[in-house]
Amino acid sequence: MQQTNFIDYVKIYCRSGKGGAGSMHFHRAKYLPKGGPDGGDGGRGGHIILRGNRNLWTLLHLKYQRHLFATDGGNGGESRSFGKDGEDKIIEVPLGTVCYDGDSGEFLAEVREHGEDIVLLKGGRGGRGNWHFRTATNQAPRYAQPGEPATERNIILQLKVLADVGLVGFPNAGKSTLLSVVSAAKPEIADYPFTTLTPQLGIVSYRDNRSFCMADIPGIIEGAAEGKGLGLRFLRHIERNSVLLFMVPVSSENIAKEYNILLSELEKYNPELLTKARLLAISKCDMADQEMLKQAEKTMPTDISHVFISSVSGQGIEQLKDMLWQELEKEENQVIEISHLPIDIKKIESEDSGAETEQEEQHTIYLNEVEEEWDLSKYKGIGWDE
Image 1: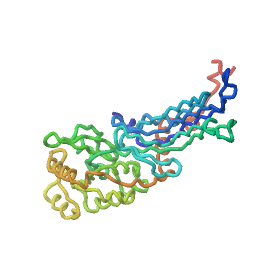
Image 2 (image 1 turned 120 degrees about the vertical axis):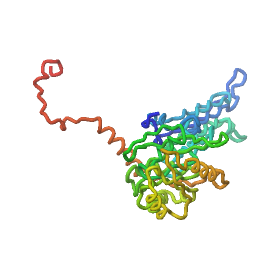
Image 3 (image 1 turned 180 degrees about the vertical axis):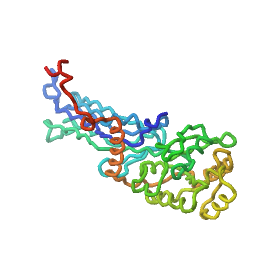
Image 4 (image 1 turned 135 degrees about the vertical axis):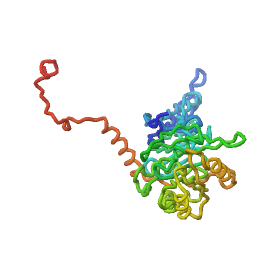
């Protein structure tokens, strides 16, 4: 599973189908020269529909399909024949996908369940045929309704990972190592910052064949809400987690200070994140001596439960699972309700365009960057200059 295949943001252009026109027709038969109006109605235009699919985990299939159109409704015919309805365009997305208006950033809808259908754009209604407009004083109406026009809209789709537990911490806090130990996930682990560039999911086994889902969120640094580091691009994945597990290394000078910085970044992004259940894990305890542990206890925050763990030696891992399961079993943590704030279109698009440009520039060589001068004379005689 390559990291480049994880796409959690796409902007697409959608257009529903227009309604078919009603028919203006009069019945004619051999012995019925003035049979009256019998024009049929036009068909409905196709809808643009979002459908949840639990078998999808990314928006990659929409990255190269930015224009999605539903078909138009058919026109009405004679003998009160109705036009064919337009074919709906169904967009299958992973569970946890949130839809925003692509121009204003307004929240539109969220897909939470498998098979759930959300109509983003309604197709135009078909026009009525002249058969509907016959009256005692207007027995031969020579007009019919046109179909309603299509509606079009820019749509932003953001994937917010659905997981029970979300790991929150600075780079190199041991989040990926913990996930690899408690689950079968194989995230990239290295001794440099920002090893994790995309969210990683793992299923954690618990007692009596029970399990829960854990998400490793890319590292957060001070100022992430303002765009520093990886910015707020991945903070949205924390919104759907039931419990937040903060991780701070035991070697930190002030554990409470680092915890408060992380908490502050979450509050700047969305204040409702502070209402979630929180636990604190002090990681990398296998390399700590008694003096370091005593210093850590002195700088521990007092408003959160904590546990000392070591992913290498296994210290405190079972205790951590017990604490997480107790929080997940609480009734107030069963239902995840959060209001999705409007997004800043310019800020998000500038981050995405900057990332794509940086990736393209690594593989681009411009002529004016070549140190030697180009000697065109040695290319003469091969056909292109004739």
